[in-house]
Length: 303
Image (cartoon, rainbow, N blue to C red):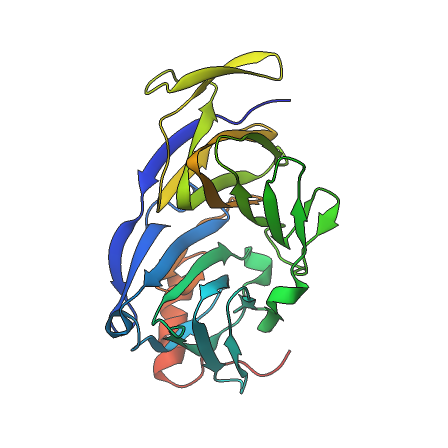
């Protein structure tokens, strides 16, 4: 077993998006090769409805897939193709924008006014950027959950894990998207296919993630698969952890336990040109998309 080193930890940054939604961005609009095939990750969490109620009014998408995962509250969504619905706590929407849609998302808090969810953007390869849009709306009860003997609990949104497979399929990046909870003090090793780029996003509690290459900030050392590895300083709430290559991730949960998303996917390794949620391979394709938006030709006929 080859433990993936922790090559970077960094806090998510406060950001305003949509019509004044206060959120935290873990990555996005930086170097697209860093976490290829993933382009952007936002944590929209707030207890004050005034900071999210105006939502994300009509905006275009092309050339990407957007993955929305709701923990608290609801998100009403609709698009220019006539699709509409509501995502509730525990629900997931995997939207393949393909050739293009106009879309809106309007968050509503729970009874206490709390709203919490995540949105991830995954790139599409050039061969699929202009395919027909499609949705995969997945209700909370459809998402398989597994619990190990030590109390580690995993919700499997997409990909295979511990003999179960998530309900989302047919995704270009062949991703694995897991919601992982590890009890206090438990040390855990989780497999990830070697060919995938991988990151974790900690959103409750804290954990120390193994780092096999750098001794900086050592918290403690443990024997893992016969090799001494370093455990880095605890990563807490709203922290992105980016991993190097290997076939597993090792962590030790802090005193309050930890809950995090563990996400990985196959790199696309193509040029990226983007204008907000329009992501193509060349600047010429971006200019074409913007011209089509101005001329009401952005939405394509059914394929």
